[in-house]
Length: 448
Image 1 (tube, rainbow, N blue to C red):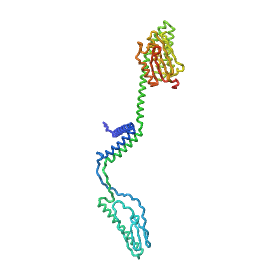
Image 2: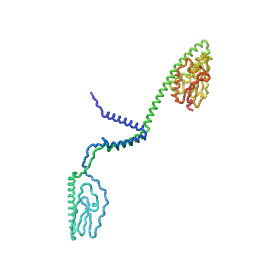
Image 3: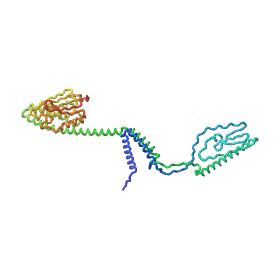
Image 4: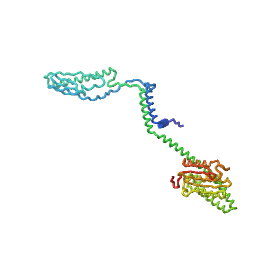
């Protein structure tokens, strides 16, 4: 059996994922507030940090005051300008000798031989630590001293200086030991940690970083949110369009078989009673099927609008068949200029309006009536009207529920938005006039 223990990498990945989510949420919040509010919050944060730094638990010291010793490394003092050596009196000689890195002046005159520090050494500032002054060294020689005696005196003086330096170092070590500082070390004091001392700088750093994040993320999250909303709206509109197209296809599937069966029954009856009329009706039915079937397939496939001439190619044989069935009870008139035949128009809408006018307006009326299909340009838009002189909107016994017109309105809204519309009005000659208004676009694709 193999047992798996929790992985440290998994814990680390979870921690960084949570940290990333938290930082993203903080950045979104910064982007959502105004700069005025940001600066106000920044000032309040600094004030709160300043007050909280002197309050518990931020004013509590962590640890104790300590003193440690580190190797003594005194900084080199700035080099002071060398003091000018005093002028050499007449009848005397002066020279400079170096002992253990320090310069000394040897003066020989009538009074004898004197050895002492140079003017530069005497004017240099004392180094930090224990300082011991060297005693002066004086050599007396008579005026009749020979050169060999002078050299011996200088040699003795140099030895005396070396002994004095050694004595001084020993005295300095004893002095450091007396005060508790190890030889060659320096005293360093470490203060305990106090969180309140670092709270205001941390608040300022947080404000500075937040300002950079807000500046870099300005508008980014809003744009992402708007893009998500736009995508959701587009998907919703596409779904609504599919629903409306499905309703139109279902409505068409219900109407077409009913009309087809009635037409075939009429043709069968006319073959025995009036063969010429039966032949005319059969030809119109063939023309209707030839024009309507491709249009229905294209509409169900959502291939866009078709030109108005294609819609009229379906309407004309349909009306001719109805004129054969209704005889003198139906008269039709199509008033569409040749210049508007290339205008784009949504499929199946005109056919639905004509079918409604016949079924609910003219067929129930005993004496029948007339039906007019017209098209014109009104305020730069294409207006297609279907007017009948039937019983009037909603007055026939066969009046529907208005679902067909509601579907047309919804479909126009999805296709054109507020640029299209459907109006139902009373026809001045009696009956109903239904008008569909859409943006005028020629078949070439140029909109006006």
